[in-house]
Length: 66
Image (cartoon, rainbow, N blue to C red; front, side, top):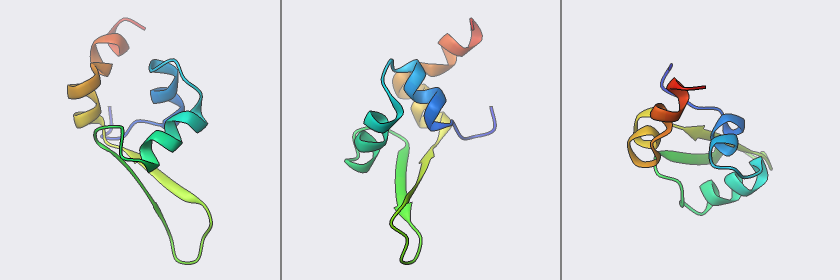
């Protein structure tokens, strides 16, 4: 794992759609995840850090068996 998890992978693991996960990240409900806007952009960039997500959610254990 390279230190980051894609929104699509995290959403699949949590059994939810990507937009729901993005809204949860915007509201600081996902540990180790954040989002930000660059300059005058209307779009967010999302970042899910692997280590906090794995430690809190247990993502690594499931990834080993996929």
